[in-house]
Image (cartoon, rainbow, N blue to C red; front, side, top):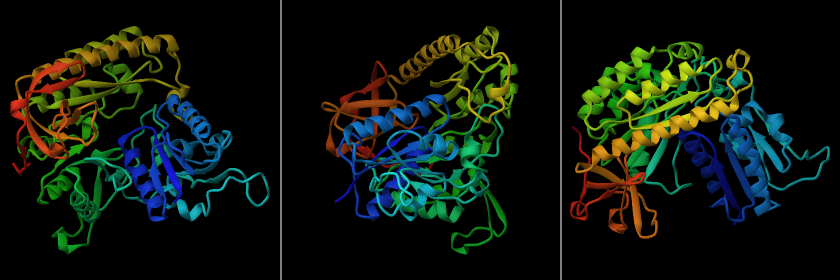
Length: 459
């Protein structure tokens, strides 16, 4: 049996799509192996948010070929869509597939044999549709291609926003969504497969929208527009022992309705990841974001006041063109005072074909790194403080299958990482645990509180 290995760069959306690509290989008789093992085919699903992702792609290709010089290397994803010719020049790459093509990989690649240069078999085959053709929605979700208790489930793709630093609209196309009927059908299949936590992913999940005029079986109104809130309500009508987590949502799209739904139904994870990008009014305007600092601050406090023990993650970019020391300190102090639980810090990097690359007053790379380190330290403090607040409280934890030196780990609904002595009976079950203490970046439990699993019920 031929073997295939995968490496995924970037976001949870990419992981869901890698899983779907993996399913194609399973259907064609391949077995999936770890990327450190020998593989006949090696697929790299790329990201292009930062220049580091581009460099990392090159490093992964070299590492894959060191392990197995005869492995057929396929590169796909956002970097492949934007820079196919650049990738094709990397030694060892055999094929480059764009954002559309990766979902029909076997239609483009009939075999996976490395070929010498010839007029019949060029050594690097490039299949990339132009950006204007990225208008279809390709379903993606965790499948038998991976072994998870938490499923990544793509409901939306593309983006209509014009943030001055971002290349994603160029790599993914315009915003588009799965129909409600498709979402509900695939959602039920994931639950049937045994997944207990469904993570809704997309480029801009909060922008989910689908106008539907069919499928009376779901009792949907004709010509009705379905937004994320209405979709969540439909999903929660499905019976089962599960919970739903929104991977990331723009602050201008996190509505009062979604907040209330989260507060009132325990199957909705009490956790949001809400990008900020900058706490400086001046820089936020240059970034062309769709909210003001005051709007973001009001949203955070409103959310934590409505939802008990809410966990909030924040994306932030440092070193954006024109960001002065004063601008950075505005961001630092803004985040320091907010009731958030962790930070994802990105160091700004110039991306081709964005407005930001043409902006004046570039920040020195050394200074960018310094500012990133400051915010990462702040993020670590924020996480520790949030974890400390959980000590003595009972949390619902979904434990994973891995055995880490006699320990098992899992996430709570509010995205607190928890560890406990390994017990096979607790795998993929919601367990009420009482938090005992914080051990570095993970919480420990009191043994007496972990005897029985629980079912998540509608609120």
